[in-house]
Length: 411
Image 1 (tube, rainbow, N blue to C red):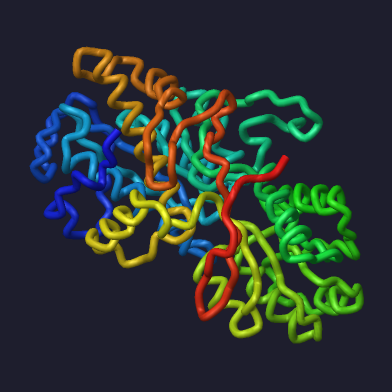
Image 2: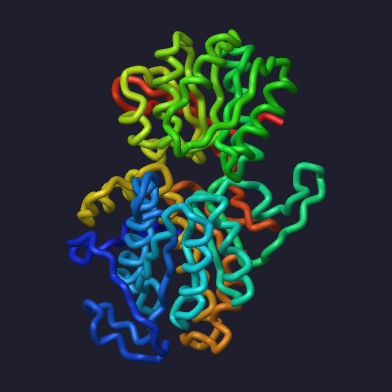
């Protein structure tokens, strides 16, 4: 399938402003739409932290999904359909995410939801959306249990909700990938493992630890921290005393940056390594000069190595968004396009109109989408997980993140 960014009409992308829509009938005329000619409105809900410590990642998610909707309208990708977005702020809190899920369900025009960022928030939204047969595609959730059930690590994989999908690969892959790089490539043999006790952080640290020990590495210490405190001096002292040659942190950049800085100041001149939750320009600001040499894994290949991704970057800039697309921009864009492609399939199968059971039909169609996206091939397996298992290790150097290795997990 030809990539949509080749077809973009830049005149439509003169602003990064977010278009909101109120509840209403899908049969209403779109008189307020900017010349797209649609006669039925489909809203794509976006849930992400738009304020607070993780807003850099959340705003990148929002803007990228918004860009997808604009492009779909510009090219009239689905004849007779105008796409709009409704973005809600979850503040990285599960309770807010659940409330937002109910709001999306209450808007009959919403046929799909992109988000959230945090696995714990995703967990709180799943049942609400599934009960309404409303499809959810996360660009960032990595906890394996969201698609494979709580006993996935025991080999008992059961998909909890058929309406949940994701374009990011899971911690079952990401944690071990980091362990293999550190042990085999970086030759690190003694690790101190820290996590923030959250769904994402603890899960990621757990899968890393298991693989590192399996490879022959030694875990010389473990700790849990409260990411809200920002005072990690006692943990930093323990890291120094343990004799570790690397620290692995399961968590996100608001705590990881200060943690790295304090570990170095305590005298442990060793790299801190984390997952995609620290792969952000904000981490570089927070860790400062002490963070140079730290590492992060993130889902997918480096965005500047894919022709389709280069077009996405160019079009994102043309759209005039104030915030960078950050780590999950490409995955959010592809998540929104998965919903758009599903809507297209449903409309074309129903004589060019949305059926009365559009939500259920779109959820079913999402599982069958297959196209070349910004992040590579976009399709889903029987659990709703992405079939794209590519990962990349990045190093903080020269004031930015630089890719040092890309590939897939070695079994």
